[in-house]
Amino acid sequence: MAILGKVERFLRRHDMPQTKFGRLAVNDPRLVGDLRRGRELREVTRKRVEAFLANPPALPGPGATP
Image (cartoon, rainbow, N blue to C red; front, side):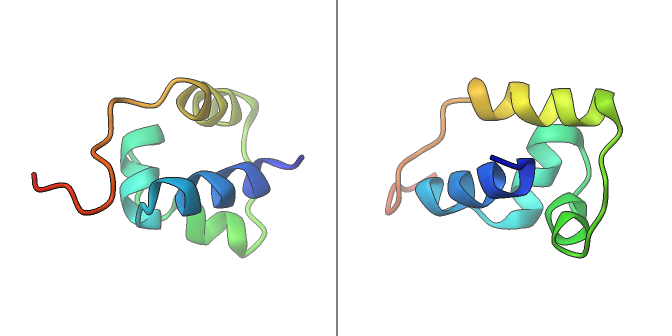
């Protein structure tokens, strides 16, 4: 599966805004929007995104209070 598909699935599963994902994964809040518009990732960035997808930080579930 392409990286964008993996990211989209993660966003739905964790009910996470795209900007938060980008900030947490690679410190780039525009990452997901850019991917949706056709951005190609450099190898190092792709590896960082995949590492985040494989081992995300502990995230509160939907409806949890911060």
